[in-house]
Length: 539
Ligand code: AMP
Ligand code: MG
Image (cartoon, rainbow, N blue to C red; front, top):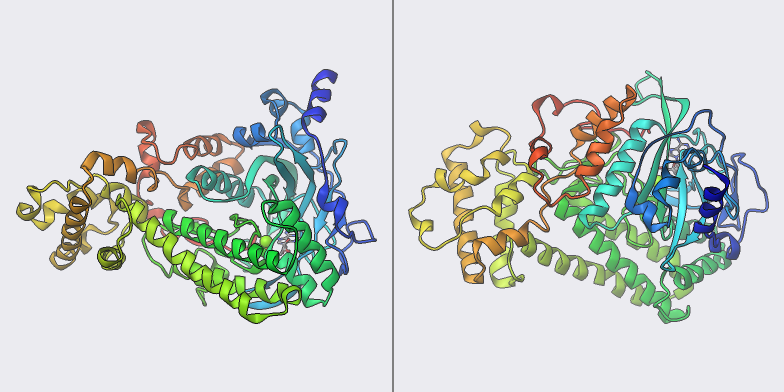
């Protein structure tokens, strides 16, 4: 990069570091592990790495930040987004937060391996925080190394972008850089540590504040800092709300409940299981955050969790996510209680989560089925019937909904069509065709007939319904085994599949005829393979 380009880069990235500018800092700087009190963050320095190389970047995110394609391809880019080179205006820091992990208060957690470079305000006046994940230890690293491996970084990079293109609220990923360092991980905590290639993802979000960011101050009785952070968050991230006051706190909490409910409904729509919904992994903005041992439902099993650490309890299983989000919101309510000092209004807002979730879920399901609107008298039983037939036999959720759109609902066919012919369009969704016994087939067919009737009464023709359904039922998701295949290749130095999946998942609702194989069911070999069906937190 020549001098002129360099100048443009720093011009384009206008840093405006409000978080560090307005909130109390840890008086101690440096990366040594410690308990940090009376402070929202600690200033730290990213660890230098030997050979940062760009693996991939998301062009849409670069554009949002006002970064030119030439800059993204330049030698400076991996230097900057590995933390090796700081630009003028960057003010690196790690955030202090706590959290409930698997239902237990865990005390101080914090950015143990995330380092914020600073915040920029883009060409549209929008604020974005840039955060490196895996850039070395911070005061919050506890016993860990502050690093991340290529495997988990590919998973975070691809999945957060895939989610965004699916229309799911999420943090974004600007870049994925390999560091040239080796990082030792015991992937299954079974006494078999091995070196793996290190990597760093640059995550981007308006704010990385979590429920746990508030909890830590309440837990320590640092109510003045709690108030500062709440007021700051309202003014910065919820500028449409009134100036902080008792009522504004409640309005703010209500909005957090609402956006959290909406996020969970999106997860249920696309078949996403977060895997570690600890309160430190809940964004105050209702964004999906911290992609670790997440997974995508293949077989529709509401009790499925990809996280091996959760294998015994299934606390964070697919179908439990709505309740867990509520439980987490209760913890947030407890944390902000000292600012409100009244239980009743907080409880009322917490109840609004349940209503918001219900009504979003109902309209989401109606959309998935191509209906114009949810009708309680007709659709409650239609939906519960659907969830039953999805669990009769191993059924691929994504394929099922996508294929359902091609079911003919026209009047004449319904009564004459036999069960086997009727379920024909859905056959690709079934993992074990032998399990489609006469009884199972007849139950599925009977639901399909109810559905046909409902759609006919709704007055939507096949074509319009299909078009509508295909905008909410993705054809392509980041199937667990696909991410693993991309990782296997990347660990051999071949990044092509990372790029291919990134491109594929930019258009998850489009038919991409030359990419049909990526819409297929999970192959049998992936059923029990590590990374494809089970994941640990080791990353
Ligand atoms: P998680 O459940 O992965 O979101 O992480 C919980 C806490 O552990 C957070 O405070 C993380 O920053 C921290 N953490 C996770 N992995 C590492 C690591 N390799 N080094 C330092 N801290 C980590
Ligand atoms: Mg986390």
